[in-house]
Image 1: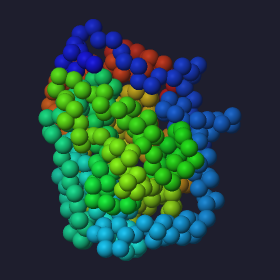
Image 2 (image 1 turned 120 degrees about the vertical axis):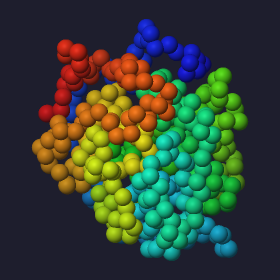
Image 3 (image 1 turned 90 degrees about the vertical axis):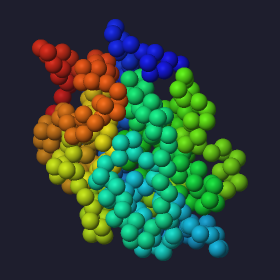
Image 4 (image 1 turned 45 degrees about the vertical axis):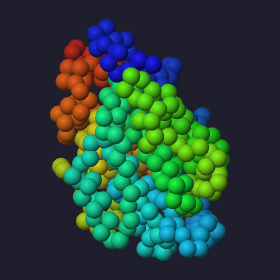
Length: 392
């Protein structure tokens, strides 16, 4: 496999980014999510499966789900164990909400596990410190900065995603810690494929986190395929899931907290800001969106979401607006205003730090961005680009 520097910037051909061969771009009639979102499914009425799943969640017996949670925890509690569960924790609103409830509402002793951001922010560090001071134990795993940066540079060019390696690490390290420390349960947040539109491989995946799904939907391939002139097999240790037989012996189960309890990202923020001095984005909102409480711990996240806009034609504002629509907080009409105001905003915050980290100047950055534009989504207009089918 060619490494980062085996690719030249001149004469580079566009790399397909999960292209869909559609006659046109369609948007959900209830929310605004387009059919360019990978793996999303629309019904004959033109409504996406995220909206249908949101409607179905309103009919769930949450009291029964809570009881199921209590029984599961009681079943897996080990006498004399130091920790009852692992919580993959960024210090953001969602994972902090879970950690706080697990410890103070349900009386469990969680071990918080963080896979270090590529480019940590002061906001993220302050938010983590604020929760830890309430009395949590914490493992912070920092992989080789040299390898992390190399993977970010390489996959920014090859896949239009500098966080491929990080995605693997955040999935693998909490499971490694649980297996090594003999901790029976891991609680992740929500099941993204059902919550936001995607493909559910098996019905029980709404409850149990499955490595097959993680590999296929979140990482994209096996990290062992990343070996090159810089990355050795030993360098991949933080990015690899433990062997299946090890997990079976340790009897580790990874579950989604949102299966057992109503899930609302805005309510999660309101909950945690009452518990700790939770800091928001520097300007009150993040680049590309109207919210300021999400993905605050990594400087590269603004570029990551901008690349989503480039590859799939919908940005951070549309993503956030849809989540508000699912919970009845926004009308489609008001959500569309946010999309028109913010979705195409350039990621200026931290930008100079990010391109320095990626080892390039603005010209090379723009060249990589343009090679990941899907020609079915974007068209040339003068010296710029426009969406062929903007949301309406």
